[in-house]
Image (cartoon, rainbow, N blue to C red; front, side, top):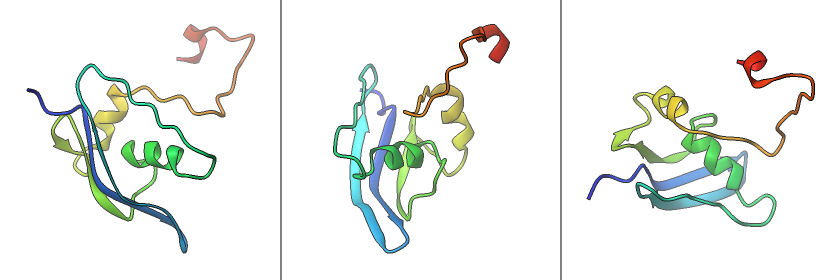
Length: 99
């Protein structure tokens, strides 16, 4: 069986003194879709940003396709699609104009 696409082990994140999550571990196998559900402020967006290395977790590791992201987070960003809840919409622009 191939390595998971994403593997998170013992992720921990704090904003100042506030603990967002501690020792969060999960993996996403090939061909699966991951959805994060929970109340506002429980760390869903922070988890995604930690995986993409848009924020640094306080502890733990993330691997993408079997490789540690600390070595090259840009590889994941080239392969992953991420749309945040605050996506701007430009009604007069076409996709070809934005790229």
